[in-house]
Image (cartoon, rainbow, N blue to C red; front, top):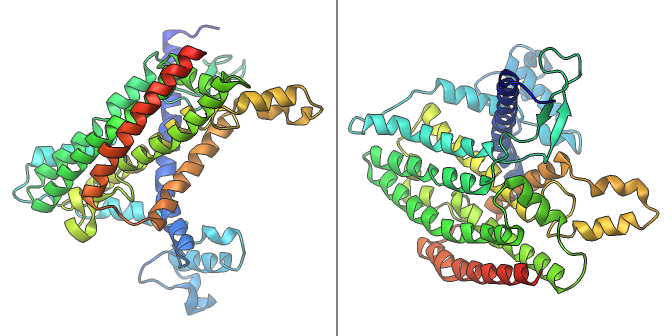
Length: 407
């Protein structure tokens, strides 16, 4: 059934709302998860209750019900007695964070370039969210509207917003615009520490974009496409089951995943590459002069970029919508198609579940690394990019071309 123009626009609007709703829900949950994961990794308390000068859980049951926060704290104190669900203690904190940012005073420095100062956080956030237009969460339709559904009956609700032929090029092009928001915001603050942070960020992101793009050219060469859906499917399911070409592709994807992920950490200004906001050197870096919602826009864009990096790593190296990573899915399918274990045949088909689980795992790795590794010196950071990662990715690119020719 071919939709009319109005139906197509309505479905597109619903898909945009679904994708933005998913991202805008995941981002604040990530701020909560970051506190909890770092707390567990470093063997200390993470978020456990809602802060404030109101009655808390330790004041006795007679006082807990007098305020909303007191009741919440009492409930979370009770959750702490349970082994698994105790991780949910402090969950309302991200709501408190949102309220704090909404109500916090919005300060603009007197000597700042006010127009650029105001627009820079929006530029960074728009660039970080626009890339989701070309990311495919599911290779086909997630579901079909029931036949009797008003106006949209029988039409598909796809797992992607657009399926353009140059999807990867669109993602890389739009994502690179985000650095302008950081640099312009740092310059417009008219302060030395933000300016130093912005210059660091510009040099860092430009430097690591080279090996990141080269690492993503490996799946481009191996698949012969720039379409997100087509690349993801071919990298996962079109690998030879045996032979040197199949083994070489799997090894290349394995190495490429670690190179790409390292560059992804640098591109998102995450530890150990967070030199643009090194608090022991630059107060808070490029966003030192920002407060309120402008400050939150920078962090919304950072967490959204983490989701983007995780989605690309999942799609092109970890099997995407299929279960197994590094091109191992065809061997898995071959085994279950010629064995009595038909009950596990569902693991041979693509699903949005595998894609999301891999994204969540990689987001956990972002938090895990922050809780574990120290920060690079700036000269070390630049040396890793120019002296190691770029030569490695050039070698990988040549090997990918040879494998494509051999296939």
